[in-house]
Length: 359
Ligand code: ATR
Image (tube, rainbow, N blue to C red; front, side, top):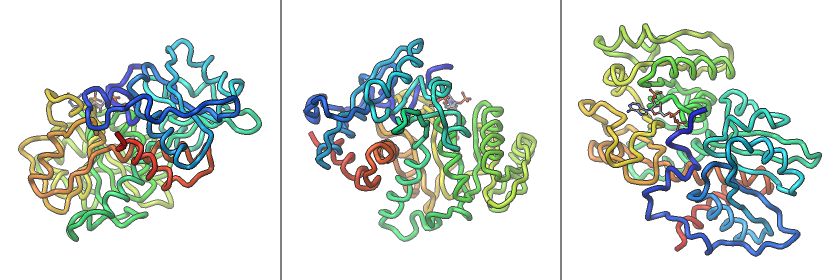
């Protein structure tokens, strides 16, 4: 499996960061034989900021827990995962490039981990069995809810009425691993989701897999109410879309080519989310069509948080609400820690954010 350029948790998103650069010793816990261990399995993991934010939260809660980076080469993934229980670990996070590779070594997967084919959290259960979960999507939704609740203007984010996003039209840019978590979480809320990707078949595959897992419908963008395509893009968009029918939920998923379909989808979108790796580096092209304007009332969320992106700068200058993905890192971590420690996820998130801020 190819290594991805971007990850919620990965060090790759930390490369050029200075504002949130981890300081390795400040939150180093005092470790004894009775300290509960958790950590992050990745390759590499030396830039991960998870140890810093987890250890800060555990210390603030008075927990005798320690979170350690666990660099594991690809050929040792099975040994590492199977050794967690024997070493007394309560669990582990998993980051690039192992999120998929750990799956064969786990005893059980949650429905979301199974549907998206990725695990970011392993829980060692009392009987020693290993549960694989993914908290990325829930972390994204928690951050979106928190950030939009804090929007000052009444016109900002006015259509985002949590927990249901049934009448919200979402444009997801990209169809890699990050998109899977986000699309799954959105599909659970009832949102109408258009996935736009340079490689169309990957967008189609995401819609098909998640649509089937959640029994939600993916249909032609041209016929989806509220997510109308313009005449110029309707033919390419509708020909690109397959339709699945499901029961019980109102969400609709559709796949479209980037950049051709953007102009037709952008105006009606309430929420636009960049899940591509474009923007990690200053020289990257926009994951967007520069001739297409954002508008007031739109929320633009960029999963990238290591640097201010051109996408968010444009969105802000054109009157839209611009949100970065640092909070997603925090909330996915908090949800992992809640699974291990039993503590409240929102309190953990608050403490983790404080831990990242602390110099
Ligand atoms: P991740 O798991 O981090 O999401 P990925 O699987 O490499 O990483 O996906 C990166 C996303 O960024 C993909 O949607 C990719 O588009 P393709 O599926 O067509 O490769 C998108 N992306 C990367 N570089 C791009 C570029 N120059 N133009 C448009 N999309 C790009």
